[in-house]
Image (cartoon, rainbow, N blue to C red; front, side, top):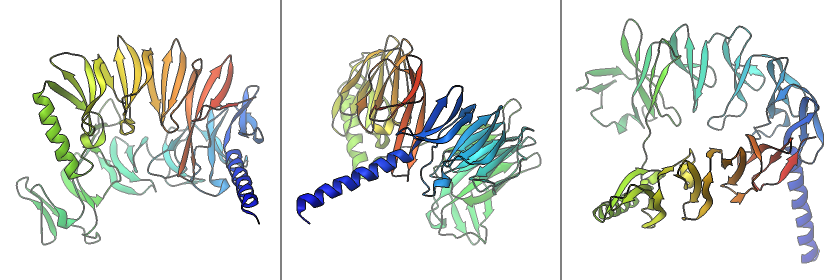
Length: 425
């Protein structure tokens, strides 16, 4: 086979593969007042017979039946698979998807009696016995009869649901990495200054990461040891009279490397002597800081890595979204908003009434019409859309797509990250 023919065949095969992958993604399809699903190419896959639907948001598991979407009929929710089979009947008041730590198709369901349980795929992992269930990273805060505890996603009690207050005391990589006054004495972890003595469980591996908790009920306060929680920021959970529980959050940032940290710190000190007054840092590794200069009250952004002003000090406020690690800066003057990127390029003028960001999409609105900027593709939409919601899609975890549900001239349709349009009929 000649080289030209080989390349041509390869291009055809790649085109077919991309077409199949695109057709595999299902989007909501409206027929009259009812909803179903179709492929992006327009083929109907799930008949429009539901009052409301969510989206097939999980494309991590390779089995086609593993892809589920919420559907609503007569006020109650269920789950349908990509073949149109109702795998969970529409009889639940609430069905919230748990999107944490790469765990596909976990849901928190509420039955007609108002009780909650954890659902995975087509199986309930707990009974409907909880008054509230709220997921945080890779764990679930549970409340039952005014008591709180922590569940694993499997439904197993990590900390029994029987306490008034739960406080994270400390976390360590192993018993050999104790610090801040903690030490291992025989079979106990001890903090002499705090008068804490905790027997280390015989069933635990001392070379694995663990957490120390203080738990309290009406009778006593004691300490327990559990395995490490992924991405744990919660430090305190407390039962309250008027709320299900109170939560306080702590989060730290650190430099990319130790050498980076000291380099940034040196520049920080030098610039402070030159008239810069640094306010807040908005980027991991302490790289970007908001600042004022020469006693002027207007804010800018300084990049300690590049040692330059990324955003000039010309704004009343500079806000960061949840996606600050992407290096985007929302600036404000006279209650109008604009957008800069980490290179200092102004992507949108300071002319919008409000903004928000969902996943990798910035949404700026003016006169109830929206314009979108996708951080992954660097694409900007045309103005003139009424924004409804974002729809995340995951294809085997490596390729995440986000669709925007919008309305224009009374018609509902979708935009992808390249700002291509997909209509419903």
